[in-house]
Length: 150
Image 1 (cartoon, rainbow, N blue to C red):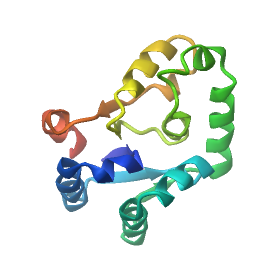
Image 2: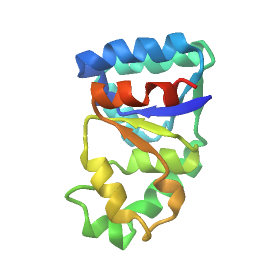
Image 3: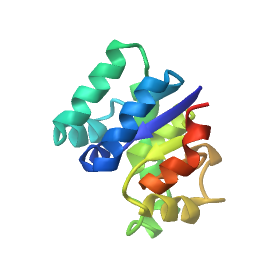
Image 4: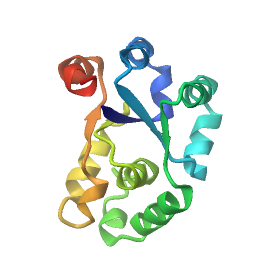
């Protein structure tokens, strides 16, 4: 069963609205949630994302990270020199800390800088922050759909 993290901004993408329905219907996907303030702030801007995370919680398909652990990893990442050096492409510490707290194979985000950031951090931070595939488009989703839903 795969675990995915979803950047709340994805809910504004038309292709993603179809994809997320497929993810829910598959029954073999779990959804990671950090609960840290940065995620809460982003969710507050997207009511559809807030409803989604409540829905998957109600159907027992949401995996909630230990908030304090996630926050600790987030804070550690923000003071990492490699993070600071690459801050033009690295601004989603909440997603990286979520992946570090709850091993998450796939991250859905339209911000492709996340992949560039991951590459910049490779070998400079704990590998647990970096073990995910970025799904940023419908084409990537279709390509990896079998892996995600298996």
